[in-house]
Length: 297
Image (cartoon, rainbow, N blue to C red; front, top):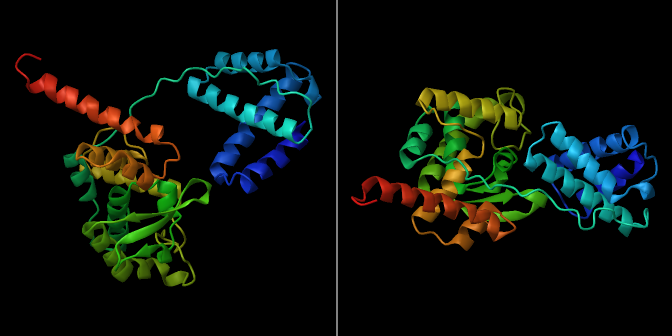
């Protein structure tokens, strides 16, 4: 049964254009699914899989302490896999029909206040090429709301300094154009002029915008270490993730009256319902302010 996973992953990459990290998640989920079917249910043939087997698999995940979000992701992977098998005539039925996913409680994204953002953006000291790079990265993240994976995936040619915009390639390699403000433009220009050449001395052919000490493209893990270090130096004790500045960007725009559709396009959300979570953040903040300051709240 494992031999059917690779054609499915190829389909996700070529036909669906999904990101590599997403495809790897599908692969992990399906390998654990197939392993369970063989070891626990003693199933060796795809056509023998029934809805009850999948229900047992989901209960198995819950018993292992997997979160509802993880279980829901497994359901999505298994459902897509079986739909693919049926479409390719590898099986005669889809056992995931009428399979219900667990209800997920949508948690509000954690955001920084304007003051906290200012403090974090001021943390990198542009005394050397490391400080110039870190300053440019944080300014660009907050100015555009792009994902960290999109930030580190940017090449020098993807930023247009005179026109004040970047070309960004998001999930499924979808391109979008995002404007950037004068502060971010200035920070990136400084980095390009006085910072990046010092990183790039060993590797003149590297096209990546943001580089590590070896002159190669900065990794997601590398950025995460930099962010945690800068947060400590700035005295920010809130829980930070690589997405925090993205969440803050969207929330602050909506708080100041930005159009929801425009924010959706800048964030690269395929569905506007994903963007609407940020309106709940702003409503929560308004409620907190009301309760704090209204004399009869």
